[in-house]
Length: 288
Image (cartoon, rainbow, N blue to C red; front, side):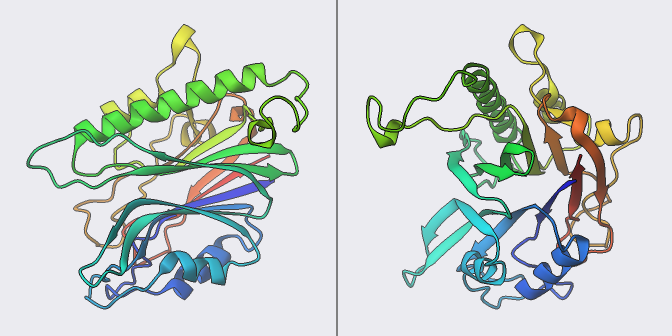
C-alpha cells in the first residue's frame, strides 16, 4: 500500500492564530508514521502569523524536521520584505523514495482588476516507489479570482496531456546518457501513473472542478477524482471550515486526483477531521 498525504497548513497555523511547525509534523506522523509521500501547501518564509509574530523560514524548518525524507519545494511568491529579507509562500513535497526529477511550473496569472490575487505554482516531481515511478503534482490554486483559477486548471490539463504524450513514446529503449547532446539531454522517466493533489479552492461540481476532470483530446481522460473512485455516488467529505475558522461553512476545496493508469489502484481516500489550526483538513490517499 502506498500512502500519500496532502494538507494546506496555512503557514503552520495554530488554533490561537500562531504558527507551530512541530504541531504540523506531529499531526502528519499521527496520520501515518510510514506515509510514502507528503504534500504541503502554504509553506511560508518571512511572513507574519495571524497573530503578528514572525514565522521564520518554514521551508528550512520542515526540511530539518523531516530530514529522513527526500524534499523539494516551489515558491509561488518569491520577493523581499522592506528589510531585504526573503518573503516566500509556496509548497513542499516530501517522499521516502528518491525524487528522480523535479519541475516547477509557474501557473497562469492573467490580470483581474479589483480582485486580490497572488502568483501560483505547481511542484511536479517524479518519485521512485516500490511499484515503479510515480509523477506527483502538488498544487495550490487561486482563491479570489475565478478567471485565474480556470486558467490554472487549463494549464494543469495541458501539463497532463503533455505528460501522457511523453509516457506514450517513452516505452522505447532509453538512449544512453552520453548520446547526442550529452548528459543534459539524458532520457528522463515519463510515468503514466500520476497523482494531482492539493488545495484547488473550488467546490465539487463547479465549473473549475468539472473542467479539471473533463476528457482531453480524442475523448481521453486526463484526471479522475480519487474521491469518486473510492466513494462512488457519495458527496465529497468537507475539507475546509470544519472547526469554525475563516470559511463561512464546511465545504470542499482540497482534492486528490489520479491519472487513468492509476485509477484501478485507488483504495482509500479519507479526510482527517481531527486536525485543527489551519482551516483545511489533511487528506490521506491509499493506493494498492
